[in-house]
Length: 313
Image 1 (cartoon, one colour):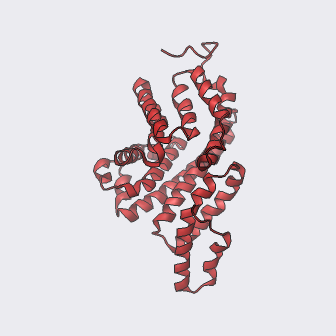
Image 2 (cartoon, one colour):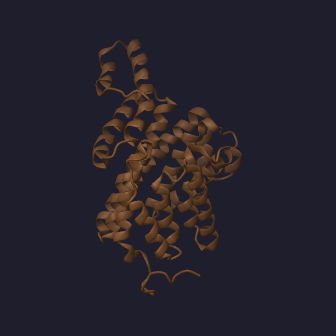
Image 3 (tube, helix red, strand yellow):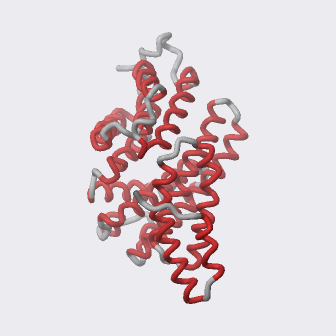
């Protein structure tokens, strides 16, 4: 098990001389970035984590001021702002949308967009530390494949969180045409990651492409999304309930397959989250999302077929 870091350790650098302080802050930075994910992911109280995460992120930003090229901090900040923005702020926006509170949804979505952009920028900084000049090449959104050819397996955490935050920022800021024009970049990053190691992080790369390909529209996009879902289920051993929720929301709603949508989300809503401690928080949040979607199924499905089962061809 990875060690946890006492909060008092974050204050230690203030008490030390300049040279000792630099060494101490690097020790703390290494420890914080090595332990944080395990602490959060195994928790079963989303509200506690929602309150705790901002403090942790700000503490890491303070450490980053001391060590601006610390890849571990840059990766953790990209990951942390992405996950916090998606799990809590974007979730608030989507719930407000479902409940018809459009003004509140816009406020939440704008905050989420800013968090995702902050995460993206930390990720790009990290990629530049590993591969100087790569961020500039990505900014052009042209000739992406040659630019990404230098990426290796050890880059995958940075690649994943940079691409995920970038895609989420675009989705949350569709009115920003400059941002929308960058849409090819996260897709190219994730395709390069998939080519490097499709099994990375228990199929997380395939999971990304479930809503991504479904959003492309048409039968072909839904077919590719389903293939990614099937592969991610194999690689994750079915442990991540978020994958099932994503498939139901992205693919089954598009296909208007209410019967399968209801079956899968009912399965998620009744799942035992205590049996898999390593994915506990994500699964608790997935259960919450499944229940919300089931409660608003009428708004998600066309009313042409009374049972909701007729929209399939």
